[in-house]
Every structure is written in C-alpha cells, then in structure tokens.
Amino acid sequence: MHKNPQVITTINIHLNINILIKKIMKQEIKLGQKVRDMVTGFEGIAIARIEYLNGCIQYCVKPQSQKGEMPESEYIDHQQLEVVGDGVDIIPTGEPGGFMPDMPKAR
Image (cartoon, rainbow, N blue to C red; front, side, top):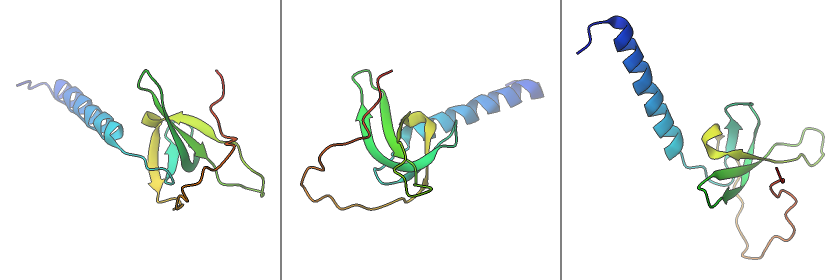
C-alpha cells in the first residue's frame, strides 16, 4: 500500500470519478422527467429518446416556454443529462400524435 498522501489522494479521486461515471451511465431517464444538461445548464422535459446503431442515446429536451412561444428542443447525449425533477405525466391514448416538429437536426 502506498504511504505517499499524494498517491492516495490521486487514487481516491480516480475511484470517485469511476463511481460517478457508473452512476451516470446507469441513470435511467424516463420520458416526461425534467432534466438538465450538466455542461450547459439547459433544462427541460425529456420528450423523446433516440438510439443510434452505434449505441449513442440522445434525449430530446423541450424547455419551458418563457413568453407563450413554442421553444425549440435540443437533442442531448444521455451522459450529459441529470434528472432534476418529476416533470409531467402524460397518458398515451394509443393514437399516433401526428407530425413531430422536434426531429433531430442534420449535423
């Protein structure tokens, strides 16, 4: 075992980072929950989930309207999101919702 305090501190930091990464990776986001982008602070309701062939998972996050306008949503990688609230409950009717204006943008 290392007796050098700097080495022990470095090991503890790495262990804490690994625990945090595992926590984020296991966090399940449910549609309707309020989420926040940990990088930008962007907040809103998770309204859609998309999974790509390469394993990338993104959520469409719709912010709350500030002045009665329809705000634009953003697709954000799930690793950057944290759940910050219960959000909303919407009961599906079984009928398709029609045109979805919040489609992923071409990059």
